[in-house]
Length: 371
Image 1 (cartoon, rainbow, N blue to C red):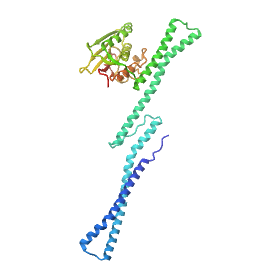
Image 2: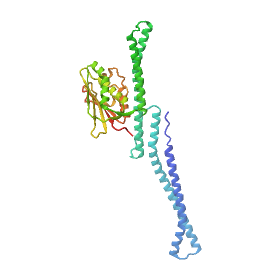
Image 3: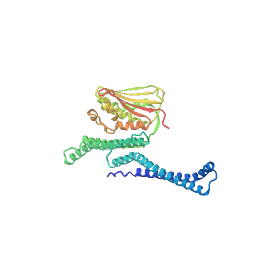
């Protein structure tokens, strides 16, 4: 339940300004009452010379009356004007903060689309409001991602679970024979569940910065050769050509060899699933001009990726269209590959000329390990 604005901050600011005004008025009165009589007597003596006691007493009374009356009227008028101006300024200062408070309560109640209106002045309150709105947008995106993740995870779990349940019911009812193929199917479905759970756990650890890396000098050419050899059988059965384009004499790179193989395996698996028979996939490896990074890239002549889908291809369980929904992947391989790449201090990017024009996934690896 949202609380109505009570303008507490405006009243506190007004009270603070009121105390400042009172302190200033008291200071003014004390200084005026202490400093005015000696100065007045000095100037009267210079102008009139010695005066009688009666005249002096009347002059002192006139000075006191004029001084007190002037101070009273002037201080009262100044206080009213100052309080009016203070109320206006306090209200203007408090309004953006009250709006931020109300927006925060809306966010807490579940309305993640709520945003605060930035004040017109370009000051710290405007910066605070903009930062608050950015935070709200990030929360909204996180919530949308969380809901989609749960939905997609349930979808991914449903297929192998349905397979296991169907075969078990058939075995119990005697409809399905317990043949070697039956046990292979059950084992494959259970293995898919295990891999999915392991992949989700891996991505979670990487997102929390808890991905352990065993860095050691690694020969990039040997790494590419091993990845190509591991994927060679699958590519041969799919009728896809797998090539290597490795720059000679590359310096070793300090990386976790097993994790790097996992990145290349995911990239090659992704390329194979989206490249038709007769196509070609190439693994490239080269050093940049200044020798600070090594680039590993996997290019294919397959489905390609639309420009508007490129920013989402690394999201968990993302599938942009029917061509990317077909196939046996869990939709999390590219997410894992990017998480590992970033854990090494580099990054993994995707590019494509467009649908049907193939795609390229590029991993830039720092040569020296991060300090």
